[in-house]
Amino acid sequence: MDLNAIPTPAALIDVRRMQANIRRMQEHMHALGVALRPHAKTAKCLRVTQAQNDAGAKGITVSTLKEAEQFFAGGISDITYAVCMAPAKLPQALGLMRRGCCLKILTDSVDGARAIAEFGQSNQSVFEVLIEIDTDGHRSGVPPEAPELTDIAAALTAGGAKVHGVLTHAGSSYDLSERVALEALAEQERALCVRAAERLRRAGYVCPVVSVGSTPTAVRAKNLAGVTEARAGVYVFFDLVMRNVGVCSMDDIALSVLTSVIGHQKEKGWAIVDAGWMSMSRDRGTARQDTDFGYGQVCSPDGVPMPGYLVSGANQEHGIVSVRSGTDAKIAERFPVGSLLRILPNHACATGAQFPEYYALAGDDMEVWPRFYGW
Image (cartoon, rainbow, N blue to C red; front, side, top):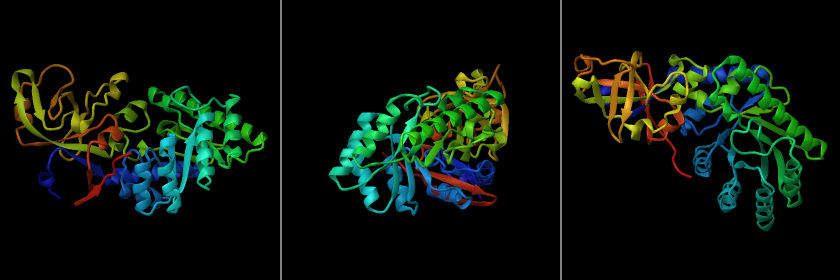
């Protein structure tokens, strides 16, 4: 394997680390007695998803219907589209179902439920629908105790759709860093989602699925009683935000960006690389955390982190490598023009999205794995 043969900037996957991350999460979910339905939005790559399913995962979660179409074309048929359904996208969803995809869709409103049921009725089709539950006030979903919960179920079933279950995502877990706090949020996520399912069942709805999400809460969950599946996603690669949250180490991060040094500003102690925000993304998630990694942690070409060095600034196609504090007067000697570096990303999902393919590195072997795009 010759890294110099890879055009930079390029997204690299450390396959050994990725496989270890997959194995740990699968074993953890197995020990807790729930299925793992990984969220494919992080990698959006059939080879990565196949590795997860080979390890024991059951189906996948997607964030776009285009992803669902591409994964279905790749042989994966058990798919949950975990974004509330826009009525205009129902024909696209129905097309997938009629081709044999076991697609589950999502809503969190009576209006959304009615649109789904009415479209299904008018097309002689039955949609399996999950109701999104808000368990932490982070984003969308209906509160588990809200009267609207049973109203949504009623609107679905009155129109002939099926209540497949309830689904939640404790996205506020990204704002935490202490184990005790993450464990508490994982329990809150579990208890409130289970509570929503219990309310629906008491009202006469079957509600077979109780689905929870978020990598931090999945990693720190100690009890998932009443839950049927978890939908962690970024764990497959991890990233610097997850490192700061405290659910992985830097040595677990499987995604990096290979970049070339293209110049220097010696008086400023800068090395200029060809990985700007078009490759690293504009995600500065670590800026809100205890340790700010700028646009990414600098590593040697073989992936060993170089303490103190980070991509401190970025333009479209230029990145600025500098030391965290002070100035490195010998930076031009340390990083000559043409030398290679690897950059660990703040947010693996956002950085991966900048590239059409990954270079998957396993020992001395290298393969190119295509990545999916589109909505």
